Each structure stands twice: as structure tokens, then as C-alpha cells.
Length: 251
Image 1 (tube, one colour):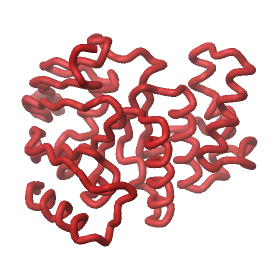
Image 2 (tube, rainbow, N blue to C red; image 1 turned 120 degrees about the horizontal axis):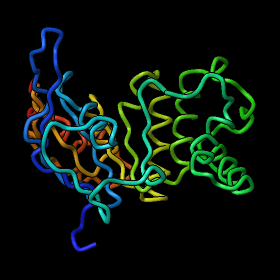
Image 3 (tube, rainbow, N blue to C red; image 1 turned 180 degrees about the horizontal axis):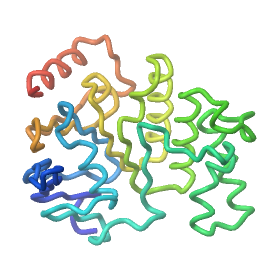
């Protein structure tokens, strides 16, 4: 790899068509770079195109224009190199916890013995031991999101996308899961790109915060977060960075 990047986005544009066939501009000339092993957060007002941008990067939506390059592979990551965690959990209700975590591994044709080992490892890592036979209908929101996280991590992705993964959870559970994700990221150094609407969450978790404008979304600023880890949410420096980003965000 000649250049030090995991993702490089250059001049990305996107439109949605409305019911009366008019085009609504969602993203305009979006450009940024994510370094390998970096935890980056995309932050901006509601409707600015954050989730659309993430889905474009994940290959779920084809952009109207622009270029996306990935390290070592300018055509995008392969299925076994990329994983995504959704706000709405997105786990299969007809599969139990074990089967949900195993799902991506089966899609990769991972041998059964190796699958069992990886599922056991990630079930333990994310706090699901004892719930392997439980179905989603009997899980709390926090436990469902743990399943989604374990399923994403089980395929050992090089790149992890997270779309507001903690926004549907109560404050205590969200904080607990943030710490779990940070612990895993510090251990494995996966490249993570997370969409959030919470400034303090971005400052707590990310190395870099990409602040977007209202629609059509553009990158207004790139703010490095150089606080030591673990981060003290009550420190003067933490509040200073939160205030700095709040001053940039436009509603």
C-alpha cells in the first residue's frame, strides 16, 4: 500500500428522486480520508445524508458521482472484509443467538469446526454467554444489538461500519456497549467508521470527527480528537472539544 489510507472518498455526489420525479440532492462533493486502524465518526444534523453516505461506502447504494478507493482494492472490499452494524439491530428473528452470530461465517463457507470456535469466541467477547439458544423475541434491545455486534465481528472484517448503533438503547446500556466496542477496537485495530448524531459520543469514541453540513451534505470540517484514552467525559478538555464541534454543526 503506497498511500496511508483505508478509505479515500473524492467528490462524492448523490440524489434521490421524489414522488413527482424531481431530484433531491442528498450529498454534494463529499471528500475525506480514513486511515488504517482509525476510528472515525460522521456527525451532522438530521437529514444531512450521514446514513446514505455510509450505505454508499458499504456498496448498498450506487452514488450519482465521485470516486471511492479502498486500501489495496480500488473496487471495494470483498464481502468477508467488510461488516455493518445497524441502528435497528437487523438480526434474523427466526435464528437464535448462536445461529445469528454464525450466519456470516456460513455465508463465507467457513468450516464447521472453525465456525464453532469463532462463534464461541465472539459470544463470550460481547457478553452473550448463556443466551446462545435464545431467540430475538426474548432479548432486550441491548442484547439484540450485542448479537448484531458479535455477528459483525465474527467474520473478522478489516472495515466496520456502524450506523447510529447505540441510538435505540437506554443510556446505561448504550454506555456499556460503547465501552465494549472501544475495547475490541483497541485490541483488534479494525478500521471503524461510525455515524452518530451525538457530539459527546463522537468525542468519546473517535480519533477523527467528520462534521457534515445540512442537506445537501458536505464535509464542513474534520476535527482530530487527540485526548488520551480512556477518555474522561467530565474533563475540561473533553467539554472544550464538544463545544468546538457544536459551534461547527449547523442545524
